[in-house]
Amino acid sequence: MSSLVIRGGSAVLPTGQRPVDIAVKDGVISAIGSEVREEGESIDATGMIVLPGVVDAHVHFNEPGRTDWEGWEAGTRGAAAGGVTTVLEMPLNAHPPTTTPDAFDAKLAVASHKALVDFGLWGGLVPDNLDNLSTLHQRGVIGFKAFMSHSGIDDFPRVPDGVLAIGLKVAARLNAIVGVHAESQEMVATQGDPNPLAWCHARPAGAEVDAIRRLLVCMRGAGKGVRAHVVHVSCAAALATVDAARSKGVTITAETCPHYLAFTEEDFERIGPPLKCAPPIRDRDTREALWHEVLAGRVDLIGSDHSPCPAADKQRGEDDIWQAWGGVAGIQATLPVLMTEGVHARGLSFERVAHLTATAPAQLFGLYPRKGAITVGADADFALVDPGQRWTFASEHLQTRSGVSAYLGREFTGSVVRTIVRGKTVFVDGQVVGRPGWGRFVRPPGAPASFATYQ
Image 1 (tube, one colour):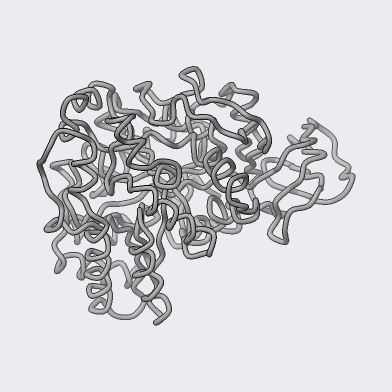
Image 2 (cartoon, rainbow, N blue to C red):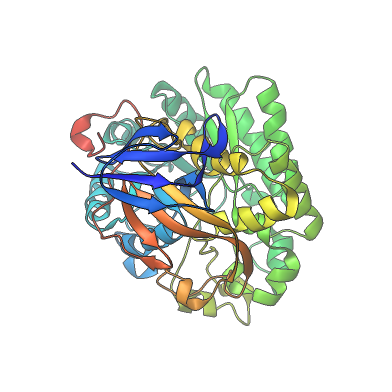
């Protein structure tokens, strides 16, 4: 029977932040209080904030099939270094994508052998797999991902509005959520000048707003119980559309990503291909308006949208931004960005950091309270952070396989010191110490236990 106690830290609990000791037995939180008595390992967290481990609801690890892009081991090493204890991995960049039961089984097998942190799997919603949604749900996917614009991957086509409406109806019958990449393909350009700003201007904020409005029409036609989640929102106007629908009783949520909160178009001009993504990085005013929405509580959660690729696929865009793969390697940056740009620069509380990165995603995808909270009976998943440590993101910190990240050279205030997954330290003092295979598959309620190792 293994046990440990985290002593002297200021823990962010569901009831607020306060100094407590936290006892762990067999991977589960067993006691929280003052001077907890427990045998076993003791971790001194004096001067640190103890956060619930991040539940990153939006990552791309590209395996099986495109292992050279990232892979589960490299991806979850980055997760461990970033205080992320659970990842929810997207379907499209695996080859084949996770749109069939066989593809799901293949991904689950490789992830179970290679993941250092716990993981869930998204399924895909594409034009030709509506008959597979029920089986994928039974397998234990945490939701279905759909694109309203081209995904960039030929074997994961976008869904026309009519198919999206049917998919939403099927998902509602399953009590499942549909995650939507909301950009109207008709409003984005597919070629232009070679400079980075041409990419930004080719995908205007209005394309997000228009797509969300169309999504809402599809939801109205899908009937009762329909739920949608808009991924990687980059602008306040899109969030306002979501919020207006919510005020009328529509069950819709939205996330944003650390790169939209950290960077501006000026950065994109300077950094180039490592910061190319869709939706694109916006101008400074749009970033500040997005921060206003975060501080006002109109952003439901923050996910990294970690989407790396081989270095060569970024280098192709050095002379012509259109030739670069779009995606930001950012799984290690979520907490540093929120501490630096949020806590220190804008007064964001650590309670809100915990909610946005852990509690809210765990609740939305059916993993709470086992994940996403520091409470007795929950998995002992923690990110211990030093809120005042100043550091610069250097290549020796980076875990992604390609060695490419837009965050290299960026200065932060606040660092992840230790990451604990079910009572086991997987990252400490700058070193990944976890082992592949420690991560367990997590699933929402309703999936048969025969398809899951999560207990």
